[in-house]
Length: 461
Image (cartoon, rainbow, N blue to C red; front, side):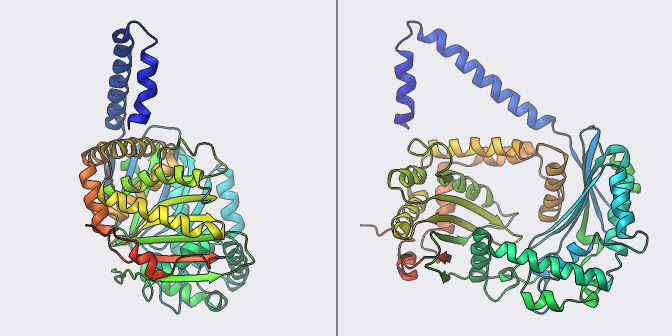
């Protein structure tokens, strides 16, 4: 902390009237804090209505001329079996291929004629279909989305065409090493459980999924109580309203190494079990994640970066990039680090990384925590810029918490975290815990798992 304060103190010495200079600085800081608090309180309230059939409608009306509306469905690859793994993602691909009311061409022309944009995605726990449109076209967009999930035809020719598209998509994913490493990390961390499966599914399943598989899945999982109709932007809540249970997943400390010495760089992820979405420990873990930070040698900064690990990476030329992550699910999560480095630097980077983790568990400072809290606050507002991210935030939170947490409440939770809380939380989740490790590439120099495990604690004398 003293290193950061010294230059300011030196600057002040060049002015004869230190008090006159300091007062406006304090005033601006106070004004900025007041504006920030006012911004949090001025965010439109999220209105929630539960229909008779159990479907939840959640909206935030900002009065803008455009809006985003979508269906957030509480299902994804976590709800599949080994036999049908990949069907949720396959179903997402089939959604825009025609219904009993609209052919694919009719659907595309109707969407284009009103200037709307349709999109969809599948994750391990959620499937989402949403539309961005003008506010006056919301009823039409909602009707199209309803038609898609209720009346899709799943024609045999369309299924065969999308089968080829998905197989090509799988090839693209396999060329994205970060995606590959994280799939391996899930497979080893949640082995033998649904969270360990990939979202796209194995090739043999994609080649065999048929119309019955799609119909059975949508009939089983697309139920009203598991669906949230979310809207953000110029959305009238009243008008929009008029208009299972999952298998538990266990974390396993283990490793998987896919060695390929022909690759120039090693891609490695290491994680401990994190907290679920609704757990109170999630906020301190987010702050700890922010303290570790991320870095890429192609970006600016480094030796003067706030992150201790980034400073070490620059000084020792330890890696090409690293990225801390906090991936949450309903009842579990993965908290850890993904990094890319040269083979001979793996051991040194792992040493610095685990040393930094242990420091979080033992002597993280209030200054670091305050800085990380400010970064989180900034990201909190930046990530909600536009109707689509707001709509996504509403849909996701309704599925995770069954409500939307107001920004001022989330800000208060962040503000309540102290260095002691971060230290105790990290000690609970990281210290002396068995990590999951996934490595792809020239990873021979990655320390033996037992050695990695032994570095998850410090001997005390």
